[in-house]
Amino acid sequence: MTDAPDPRKGMPSPQIDEAEFRKRFLSQFVDPAFEPLRAELDRVAGVAWDGYSHHRKAPRTHKAGPEFADPNYDLADDWRAAQEAIKQAQAEYEDPAQPPCILIVNGSSRSEHTCPGEMSKSWRLLEIAREICGVEGTLVRVLDLSRLASEYGRKIHPCKACFSTAAALCHWPCSCYPNYSLGQTQDWMNEIYPLWVRAHGIMLINPVNWYSPTSPMKLMMDRLVCADGGNPDPTTTHGKDAKKAKELELADWPYPRHLEGRVFSVIVHGDVEGAENVRRSLADWLRFMKLKPAGPSAELDRYIGYWKPYATSHQELDADHDIQEEVRNAARTLLRAVQEQRAGKLIDAGEGLEEVRQK
Image (cartoon, rainbow, N blue to C red; front, side, top):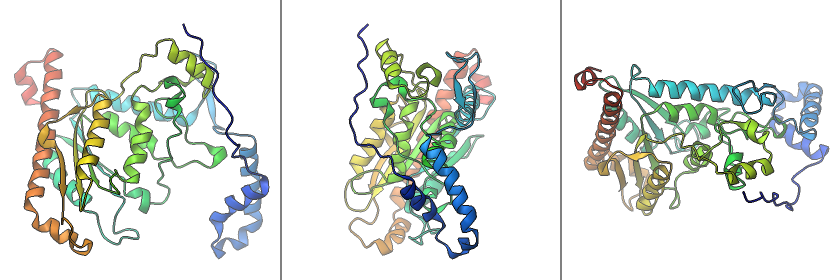
């Protein structure tokens, strides 16, 4: 086996001193209502500084236990809870007694509940698709990424690109967050991973933002890297030991595909340019992770109110019956693909066709 190279070092340190830390920490309490609590906040800032300066990323841990490669490793409680949620979702995904599940993702950050003051067209397309998918015993779940911009405590922190150091360093689910020492908390992804795992079919609905997917969609995409080749056992790398991870990868890493086999649909809408490129980008990403396209009619790139004023874009969607029907057809195609795939798995498991139809 080739010897694993040492991790490259040399970037400047991001460490800040206590004065700057306190300034940044207390900046979240600028409301004058906090003034009577200034002494208490100073004490809290002191505790936070101690956690930061001593790098207490995961202060609550328990021994990993016999199901892990290193039973004595101190495994973060947050990560273990996230793993258990994924296991439960995978069990439901595989259980023929559970209803088939379709996850529809709204990738737009726009809503009437924050600065734009108006719902997004993506949300309206989602509602059209949800009506079609939510039939015949199908469980439909909605992931509304606009809540990153409108709901308190909703965050998706950026991917730290552990995978590019070595595949085994990227844990499934992600172990980079929460990082309490850096204040990187309230990360949404531990709730999002089980939604993807439970789903038999996934539909992404996304507007074009500067020739690209939206920032909420891209944040989620990047953090789903651990679902494709990610390491389900952090004890094998003793957390984030880059050297150990390189050794594992060079020892013939198996590259587990944690979302393989689910079917997908992608709907992208724009107003000027870029819809085709964004649709292809999203579909190519899903194909690379070994998800299966539901069919050509389930992948759309369309324009609503092409070169028309933004102020009347919802009226343009009202009048565009073609795109509304195409979204319905995309949803029908996805639903049919889910049903057919599920029926095939049940038959492979030994059930008769009539039993499958009755389910």
